[in-house]
Amino acid sequence: MKKKSFILAYDIPTNLPYFKKKINRLLRKMNAKMVQRSLWSSEDLEGLIKIAILIKNAGGKARIMEEKLIFE
Image 1 (tube, helix red, strand yellow):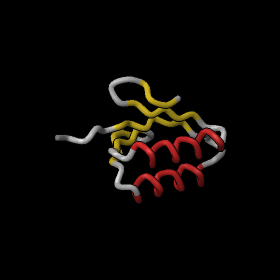
Image 2 (cartoon, helix red, strand yellow; image 1 turned 135 degrees about the vertical axis):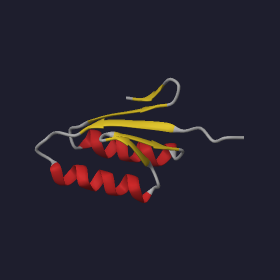
Image 3 (tube, one colour; image 1 turned 180 degrees about the vertical axis):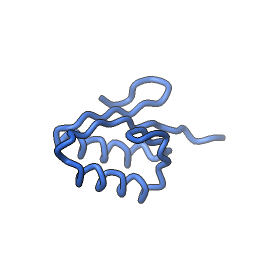
Image 4 (cartoon, one colour; image 1 turned 180 degrees about the horizontal axis):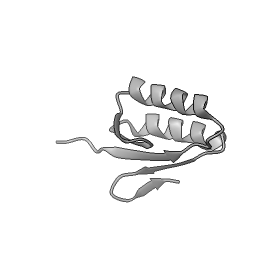
């Protein structure tokens, strides 16, 4: 049985370029795959939620989707 895959879509304010690098490093560390610049795919929903919360706490926007919206 195939595991579910989730998508993290995010937007980080342009005045935080160092933070975007940090987020990209965290996503690579959890073996997420980059789909586009701010669109990543992973089977690790808990890890994506933790990263999404970091992004939102820094003033950015983040969504996690499956076939329906999971986190906003």
